[in-house]
Image (cartoon, rainbow, N blue to C red):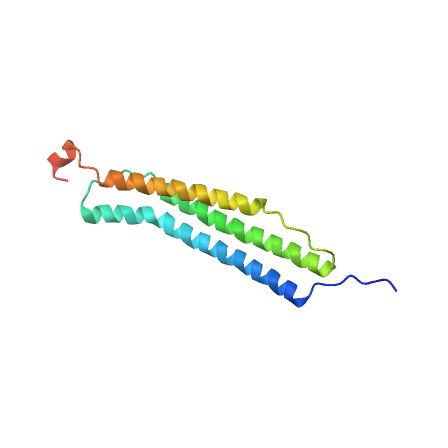
Length: 143
């Protein structure tokens, strides 16, 4: 009688599901944070209006950073679903489950680190520009 491949145990499927839910949670967090970042520029403009300070020309960077974070959140959802389906298929096939490649995870982490550093620099530049003394032309107009 041929030996039938052993199907993964329940705990293996539950572990795969927990991992998939972690991917989903991370994707949702990235998309939510992206929305907040995209709206941050609008918040800064409103703050300048309230303080009656000179409005700085908006570069729109917060919109681009926010959109990039939302896109990364969507990519995390797609990658998480793809990896989950692969793992469940391997468990159902009964073969050994091989190690997973971490190159996608490292790429996402590196991208988020670059976005974070760029946002920090952007905020420092905005803060320095907002706290700079008004120019003589602005002072004469009473702004």
